[in-house]
Image (cartoon, rainbow, N blue to C red; front, side, top):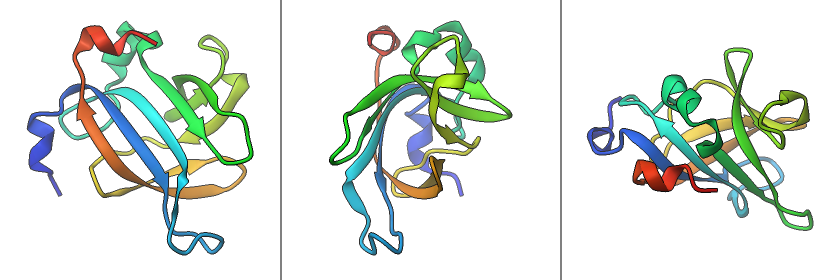
Length: 134
């Protein structure tokens, strides 16, 4: 299903993911979240060519209660993506993200120790120059 917002949301975007419903959190958990800065194509998927042109612009920050925040970059890995603390070394990845689209209000999955559902709760286009600032 195509979202009308995608015509406005090509290129770099800020995306907030919050933990969706799980057996441990039947109502989800906004305190367990990711904040991403990614280039999205018109279908809402990560645009690999735009990301490759500015790999430092594709950032992630993980917020989890009782744990220190983790930040790093979104790097390609096995047909999907990984959240890595080192831009050049995917071995230091702390989460994995399959190739999927980001659409406001929709679910996406993130693999940590287990596969978890997250909801896209915020999605906003940012200027390309602002995207490359960490």
